[in-house]
Length: 492
Image (cartoon, rainbow, N blue to C red; front, side):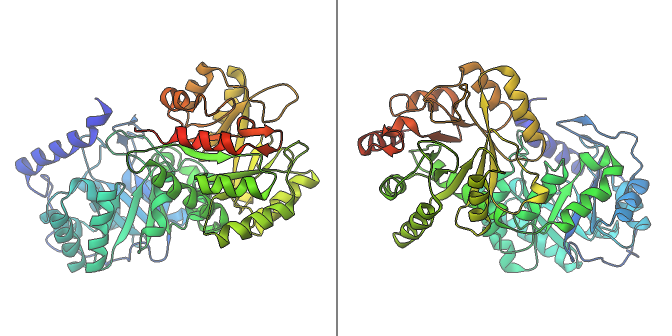
């Protein structure tokens, strides 16, 4: 099955089933509901899914017993249980929904399916659902609003899933008409690729309770979603396959809080959306090695998304006072690039100084450059890692770091005894391999002379440039900076 057609195939199969079997899908539906409504996501918490299979992964837990799985989830303290009732691609059924809703009284029950008709809302209610998933991408606005209103008429919650801009406009109309919980899917249902920065970009614009959907594999993933300000997470595969993981996941999400880590990634995600708009699409740009106010102002005025300040022994080493002055001046000029402290040793005096400035909100994030990154579970400030790469073995560290819930990793060229600003490029085959692991953040050997080729060859999400813009170590060249940003303004 071609991934770009998965959603279309699911919807087409659904239309066939509705035509052949009606909204009951051939099941015997109770004439009356006996289970009281349990408010959905009130209080906030986890939504754990009864899930046997998926189009992208095939069988996940084919022998899963819906009721016994739901009982494990309820015992772990989840607020809600999602029951997949789509039979062809996910191997669920309305019988699962009826069985789980009859057995579980203390959790809200979500019917998760590709619902297309109003009649399916009443069926969901009679089968015991407290909320119904409505996928904005497959419903026109009028149908979505009618189905949401129908759900409310039964005191159920419409759980509206969004991802694209068009989806968001539909959600806004639904919010105006009544209570809604929004779900932001980090998985593209057309290709099944996952990007946690999609929910990050949308969270502050959603004026209702919101759920982070898909891609939650680790405790760090759950923590990250809460850091962003999501009131819920929806988790399927990783609890269905490993029920013993469930209580730890619930605890991690419930114990986490919105914080500066979330604020950094939300701000960065919004800058990414702006950079991608219009005909002059470009990557995010980080200008690193800022040592003076003049360079900081020029970089910000030209359009830098991030400014990097080195807190380590280097000809580009910055001072804490400089960061304070830069932040104050840029704010007075209504310029708001994200300010990043680059450290090579978190236990050094320079590293501690930078981290402290981040904890107080002077810096927006720390770049842990080729050094260990503390667990997201133990930090509340913005941060990401940078790994120096010169051979395939170094990519194992990139992969491992990403597996621990880090949204992005910057890769830089590895040169012996030099931690940055080398002007050396990473071998092309290693860049291509790194890009397969996550959207590409790239440093090393980038200049105004090759930036178009870099973008054409790799399509990086973020580029980090330092020494190529200098007139001497630690001092940027006005001419080179202007040339670099001029080269960025190309027609896509």
